[in-house]
Image (cartoon, rainbow, N blue to C red; front, top):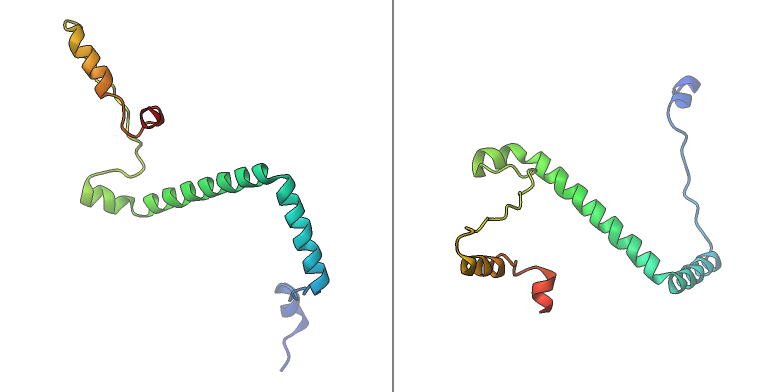
Length: 115
């Protein structure tokens, strides 16, 4: 009634979880705290970049999964990037160009927010 040796060799061997002692866990915590204190900027930069990369991949996967729905229902392609087109003002009126220049500043631009 036991499985044959050939069938057990084809399946992956069972792995047992290693449990660390309390002193080893505490030593690892102290080492991590020390490393974080010395390399805080580097650690935070890596966390932010990984978060941004994973979020972008998740968003792309979601858009790809529901692309047919967006195209049929909203008539919008979620993967198409919007093209930033600058409206050209007529060259005949210089006053119109200055108002166009000030109106093209996006309210969410960092330079606009800081001014």
